[in-house]
Structure formats: C-alpha cells, structure tokens
Length: 234
Ligand SMILES: [Zn+2]
Image 1 (cartoon, helix red, strand yellow):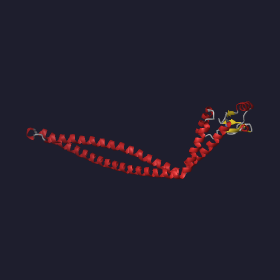
Image 2 (cartoon, rainbow, N blue to C red):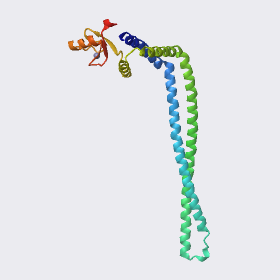
Image 3 (tube, rainbow, N blue to C red):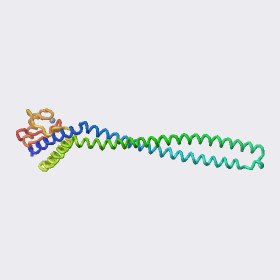
Image 4 (cartoon, rainbow, N blue to C red):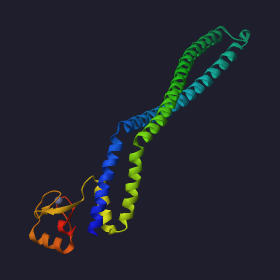
C-alpha cells in the first residue's frame, strides 16, 4: 500500500501546484474581481430597495395625515358664523390658522421626501446598470480565463480522475487522515524517516517508537502528526 500512497501523494502534489497556479493567474484575479463587483452591486441593490420601501411607506403615511388635516380644515370653514358668538369665532379662526400652518409644514415634509425617493430610485437604476456591466465583464473574464487556462484545467481533471482510481487501493482510514491534513495545508503528509527522525519536522524518534515503525511500516509523528514511513520500503 505504501507504493500507492506515495504515488497518490506525488500526483496530489502536482494537482496542488496546478491549482495554485490557476488561482494565482492574472486572468483568475480578474474573474475574482468581477465576482466581487457583481456581489457588491447586488448587496447595494438590496439595501436601496429596502430604503425605497421605507420611504414610500413614510410618504403614504404623510399623505394620509395631510388628507385628514385638510378635511378638518374644510369642516372648520363650513361652520355657520352667524350662529357663533365672538369668543367662538375667535377660537374658530385660531383653529383654522393652526390647521393651515400644520398643512404647510406637512407639505414641506412631503416635498422633501419626494425628492429623497427620486434620488433613491435614481441611485437604484444606476447601481443596476453598474451591476449589469459587471456581469457582462464577468462573463467575458470567464471566457478569457478558460481560453488561457484551458490546458491546465484539463490536466487538473485528469489528475483528479487518476487520484480517484488510486484511492481504491488505499486504506480508507489512512486516506481520510490524509485528506483532513491536506485541508490543514500540511504538505507533504507522508514523510520518510530521515536519520531516525521525522522527515517533516525533524524530531528524533526514540527506540521504542522506531520499533513500532519497523513493525507497522507507517507511524504518526507525535510532534507534527505527519505519517512517517520507512524509505527502503519504497
Ligand atoms: Zn514530525
């Protein structure tokens, strides 16, 4: 099994190298930038829509208030002044003045709010256009990336298929351990014994551990947790 494991690790190292090259390529960076731009535009659109809805609700509320006050003013004006005494007339006129003042102030608020709504909608449309542009540029950058990286991505799929085949010959326990360490970016994972020490972290193995290694052929390093193997087993 050791032979397969080492072959697996060798192929995997090529895969890691290729994946890193692809990820760091200039064309991939452009793709990533476009993804960011599209996402940013989408987030902004969501926020703008929320605030537009809030503003419209405010607008409706103010308009209703305005209508209520206007009706009240109409009613005040309908009063038959002949039936009122001087005091009542004075009260009535004061009331009318107050209603007019609050109507004027409400009107001002509504105008200001309308302006805000127009600005928000304008911002929304502009952001939508920016997002659309970013989406088009994203599609273009993906095309560009695929044409530049085509050979490499093809090689990546090939390597993945080969690794999958090799996996059938490796103890699942060892394989799982390997995969979880690969996620931690600890590479290589299988290291030879070098001068009775771990080939990964160089920590010396005591005789008792060496005995176990000789028996098991593979031993986990107590320090770096890599798998140590006997090189002459290869
Ligand atoms: Zn070690």
